[in-house]
Length: 319
Image (cartoon, rainbow, N blue to C red; front, side, top):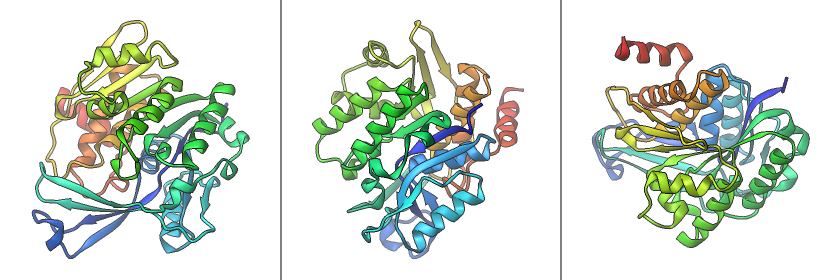
């Protein structure tokens, strides 16, 4: 028995979500603060679902860093490998704009962000060995020394039989070029056991918009992955297995407030269901239902649903 079900690796940030809806950010005067960052959200989401989650991250040594660690502790995430930056770097800030349910945007402040300075010295092999699964976020690969740390963590996991999930999590703000993005995201994807991303993110990984889902996954199946999930937003998702199975996931109707946060909640629900051996079809349902719940609420991290909320939504639309 491993101490942890999952460790997530990478970005922990602060989200400042617009409290005033239906207006551009230029006119928005009030924001509400939450923990943010895809791998942080997934650690929180899986923990709220009952998994034993930990995180490897670096945050600022100030009130914002304290806020993130305190919140993670409160929801049950193991935080011993969330380090504080000692060089005065600040945590990434994400401001969100909610013009309408269909028109939302995010504005990231990530220059010299603390999470990109996570290094190989900030975690040890024993911590990764203590988990069944390591989830790497694509953003962690966008700059050094975080890039080398992420690849090192994947290497430790592979050597010790720890499952590796690569969540593409493409954010253009910190990458230098499309070619560089493709190189490092491809390197990580080929080394992972499971790869999860949107169709647009797979296009970034391939530095091409011409491939179909089938072509994308077949390329990865020449390497380590045995399961690839391609998300198509309101059109649902598809999971592809190495033995040729294609499983389609439905969507669950909800009153949409915003568009951001869906990917992190999808990953949380999907991973939870896989861990509980519910099968890929059910995992797609749990992921989709979790995503629907989060886009109907104001936050991403705080809105991560419970198992009961997910199952209630599934049953209400399938019963």
